[in-house]
Structure formats: structure tokens, C-alpha cells
Length: 215
Image (cartoon, rainbow, N blue to C red):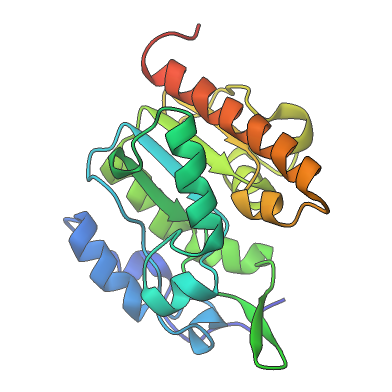
């Protein structure tokens, strides 16, 4: 578990009349958990303010932490490719993460990703809820188990339920698929190719729903 932070909870920092630019500035002062002590900066979401599709991942990685932008590292490059193959324009998608600071451990000169725990996810939840309320997407796609379970409940299993739409107050259509980083970690090229095809199929399914072509 993360040590309890002395900072105010996130809702205390969210402006009374929030806009995405205002909230993006405010999140830099968040001390609701201790992840801010190791991250370079908070990494807020990015995309159109009224995007029809929103994608939510776990947390920023090393490249995102340094750049201050979500999905700009290797997983983001793979996501861009998959979106293109699924017929989705990345520029029209709002992308963000459940947790806004990079959680890592040192391994030599490298910073290795660590999975955020439930307390860190809960501390950061108000930022994500504000993003969803402001963007008001028609289709919300959870990328990976951490995002799916944070938003859809601990009983949600991406391995069993990926690509299916589930009832949720978050958006009219809500679904989940794998995180693109899991494809990068596949043990061999054949597995990566197969998993990429499945990932693209899940995204294309979401795109058809957005176009009104799915029941």
C-alpha cells in the first residue's frame, strides 16, 4: 500500500466550474497519494473536449511521464497503428489513464512500471470522473484489466468479456479490451500478430457501435 498522503483529496482541487484546461492545470498540484513524489509530472488526458470516443488506460509510462502526454511511448505507437487499422482517427479520440502519475521502481538505469494499488486508484478517481463528465463520450473503451476493473468493478474479466458492451452510467456504450502494452510483451511474433488482430477487431467493434452499426 502507498503511504497516506498529507495532501488534500482530489475533489478539493477540482475547480468549481471545471473545464479540461482548468482541470489539467489543477491536477499538477495533486498530492492525494504519494505517487507525485516519484513522477516527473501528472499526465492528464488529451484529445477533443467533446470526443465521441474515450479510451482509458492504467497509468502513464516512462515516455509519458517525461513528455507530460498520454500514450506517446511504445504502447501509444501501437495504439495509433491499431486505431488506424480499425478505421478510427486518433485525433478524434480522447485518451487518458486511471492514474495520472507514473508508478515505477528502479532497475539499473531504467524505471520499471509498477501496477498502481487500490488506494492510489481511488485517490485519483475524481480526476478521471471529471474528465468523463466533461468529455461526455458516446463510447468509452477501457484498455486493460486495471482500467476495466477500476471503472466496471473488480469482477470484470477482460479475458472473458473483452469486446462486449456492458451497462454503465459512464457512457451510452462501454466496453473493454487489452492494453496495447500487453501485445508488446507477447512472447513471440506470431502471438503478437494474433493479439494485434484481436485488438484491432475490438476497436473496430467499438467504432461500429459509435456509427450506430452495432445493436
